[in-house]
Amino acid sequence: MKLFLQGPRLVLLAVGFSCSLLSASDVVWPGFLGPKRDGWVSHFQPPAAWPKSLSKVWQIEVGTGYGSPLVDNNRVYQHARQGMDEVLRCVDLATGKEVWKQTHAVPFKASSGGERHGNGPKSTPILADGRIFTMSSLGDISAWDAETGELLWRSDYGKRFSQNHPNWGASTSPVIDGDHVVAHFGNDDEGALIALDAKTGEEVWSQGNDGAAYSSPLVVEIHGVRQIVDWNHRALVGVDSRSGEALWEFPLPQFTSNQNMPTPTFHNGRILLGGENRGIYGLEPELHEGKWAVKERWFQKDVALDMSTAVINGDLLFGFSHYKAGQLFCLDTETGEVLWRGPGRTGANVAFLSIPDHVIALFDGGRLQVIKATGKGLEEVASYRVADSETWAPPVLLGTGLLIKDQQSLTRWSFE
Image (tube, rainbow, N blue to C red; front, side, top):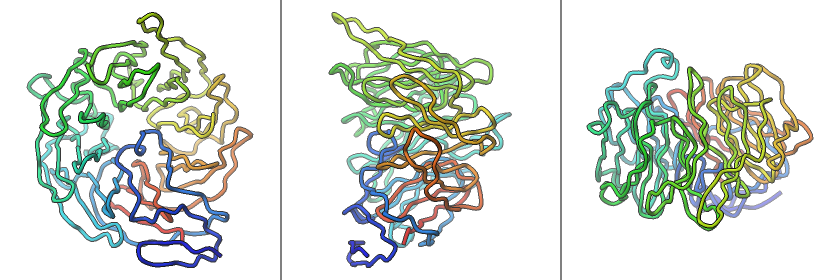
């Protein structure tokens, strides 16, 4: 048995759950895949014995959409769609009771081929310095006061680009870099990677004219240079985060129905990039005498990423290939060798998180699976039914539980 703090209470656990020292109210989860956009959950320690089932703490109706919930200061923020409006809702983490709600009329309708994914926002907001930044399905960014919900500013590039979103709606999640909020605006044919002043919404720099994709940008440091890594409609690019100067690129365009959707993964100076029906690349940007180049360290075609973004655990990459009608896989990040593949026909999408020695996999059918982070084979540790409808939004792990956004609802589950 172990004692741990949860809010003001001391709780005695008989199932051997060894959590981190952070209570649920101390958890900060500011955006897509966490603080570093890598899916790593630093505040969570796996239990000695996973419980056989989960307890539902609360459940609320929030609307449709694939955006992940955010957590900060004992509050949860969820961006979704109800009727013709996109809704940003703030609720109390402990009770699920609404603190404030703001609506934004967004007359978006999914085009042919994307109807099954609905009209809700696919972008995950990001939280920084008391502000929440949302991107609507139509491609405009809004800044909101996290405490009160007040709209601070809105930036819409619909006048610059004939349509300010790719065919099936804007899905890229903005990223924060210091006092800038960065996103790729535009449509399939034209667009730009743009940095806005986080306080005012004014443009700081604009880079390129490539169309937008469904992938999200990363902020990384390579060879001492802080940069934005962005997979647009045409290529993977590296852009100096302060000046907006283009540094390097690796062409990998969308073509026919093969879309640029997963967010690249960064590990040990390399960018691991996978695309629909195009395998996975191990790419290493190099800097010699002031000139950048991209070295292709390896390429493998046995697995590929469709919509799902992979995560790192140790020196292993864990992902979900759309081949075989959906199968988990693990590959060696140094060599690109696929170490194992799970059974096929397991779903259309998986949202991953990474914790010490384990990977959390939320399948689109509402099942959450905990697997060992090993290259020796697929080893399930625990499995839970967390929703009766589709679950495309990435989950959030708390100290002793998790938040799950399904088709219409947001649910807090407890491991206790």
